[in-house]
Image 1 (tube, helix red, strand yellow):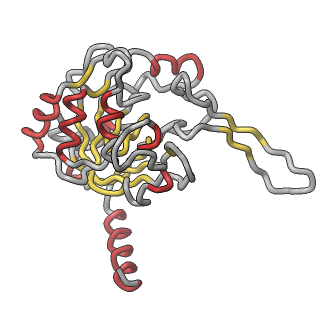
Image 2 (cartoon, helix red, strand yellow):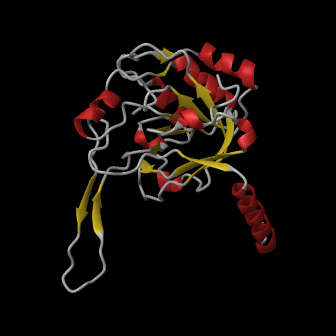
Image 3 (cartoon, helix red, strand yellow):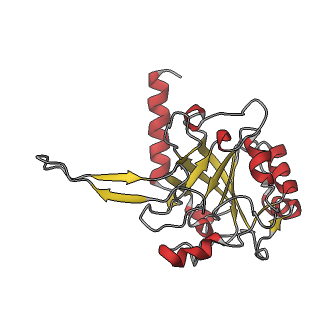
Amino acid sequence: MDTGTLATAATAFTDALGSARIVELSHPLEEGIPTYPTHAKYFQNEWLSHGDIARMNQLVLGEHSGTHVDGPSHFPVEGPFAGTSIAEVPPLALVGPCATIRVDPPLEPNGMLPAERILDWEHENGSLRPGDIVFMDFGWAPGRWALGTRGFAHLGEWPGLSREAAELLRDRGVRAVGTDCISLDSEDGGRGELPAHFVLLSQGILIIENVAQLDRLPPRAFVMGLPLPIVGGTGSPLRLLAAFDDSAVADDGTREAAR
């Protein structure tokens, strides 16, 4: 793409965003946010520098802090994507059309979403398309994502994808799958097998976890997320935004025709 064409495309993209509703899908990064029990915690330390009037902080965090993306190297998967770091993932891998599947009624504690629930959504909203970024709205984060000990509710008995559901998404050719839970796999429900991570990451399909405000999205939207280019990184925190036309929601602000 030459410079003139790129500038024209950028202008059209900016103009389109000007008329769209924007939803923040990232949780704020602050001390005390829920963290997977075995992962690094998040700390923000005021950095005092002698003789410098500029203010700054030192951040201590894990690659999987807050709203984040898992790269293929996060798990010991086999195949052509084995060992692929987050810095090797195309920079626009998480920019594109998205589909939000609302899991309603919600699953039981440690529930595993069957493939049939995705097929039901497709019956109502049309088939998932190759290249879609798919969000699973388990209704988990609201009321559970909190600071300190109150956030422990986010870390227990969360739902996830069954192997059959993960294989269906793989076969649809989606580029990423996200969840409002701490993990796309329910460890207890899957008895520790973690099928979603192995099925998806082995095919280069990225996983996004701890997504916020999925209940505000219509079934179809556009999403923008940029991972940090961490050399050798297994994942990266994300600033994740969704955009959609106001006609996708009802007058009361709720999602129209969402399933």
